Amino acid sequence: MRVDGTFMGAAALAVAAVAGCAHAGTVTLRAQDLLRRDVIVRDITPQWVRPVRRAYGRAVRLGSIVAAVDAIRSARAAAKLDSIQLAEARALYREPYRISAQKLAQAKATAGEASARLESMVGVLRDRYGNRFAAKLLHDRRLLARIGGGEVSVIDAILPYPVLRRPPRSATASVDGGPDVPARRVALSLFGIGGRVPAGMIGQSLYYLGPALQSGTMLRVSLRLDTRPARTLKLPVSALIFDGREAIAFRRIGARRFRSFRLSHALPYYSQGHLAGYQSAWPGHDRVPIAVEGAGLLWALLERAVGKR
Image (cartoon, rainbow, N blue to C red; front, top):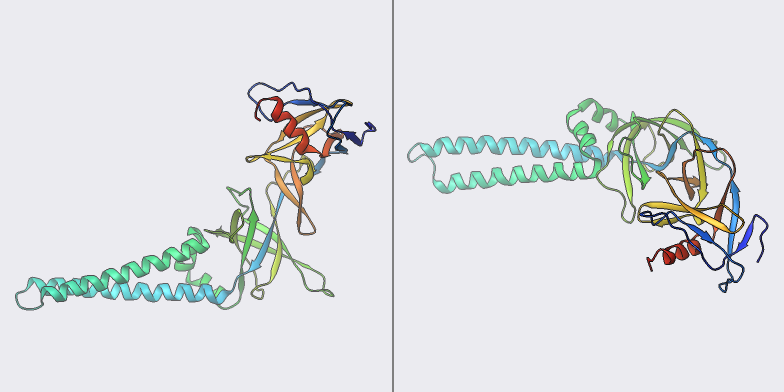
């Protein structure tokens, strides 16, 4: 077995688990391990980080938004006309020999169909763009005119889980200009939370307004969560075990001993567009020896020791 501060062969187990906390316990590695696997440890220094979430953004096709709202307005006008005609039919039905019961029934059916069609179209708009943004599109003619005229763009920012209960009202984004054109920064303003996200993804869709961009333009969106930086421990994905929604890692506390700990409100961070790991607030400033490989083995041994397997 090698013990040099970086590599450590995994071994047999002795555990002192904290009562009532399945993810809190210690694992002691011994030299007589038969598994012959390595637990790799790396010292990670907490850093001051300004809380930021990254999201992928895309400029939405504006024609589809304008067409959907125009269709709803037409359906609303048709439903209003059918409602007026129904009221007239009811008044005529009260007068003898002016209108038949069949004509009244037809007027009721027509008005009902128009009302149901309108509710369905509004429901689709809310499902796609969220209640707040849909309401703005339906009632703010100036906003729709700006969107239709190409003055502003609607940016659909896809944020992976965990979701934000209170997304920032403003954000910044980087727009790639191409291989020979430097990227430029643009400012965005929040207009609502979407009702759905792309299939196969867990998270949320946030709609922002930005400068005029060509439909389909891709953006890298930065959402600043707080103005105050916090000391943060950034761990690679290989160092983490997920127990439900909890991210758990192992810290070396002795030559051959590890203690598990839970990352409080862990947030993902990215490198070159790919998930690199998770970060969490950390109280200390000294280097922390973390098992960046072999965490799964330590977790399995811990679970076995506390009777979960």
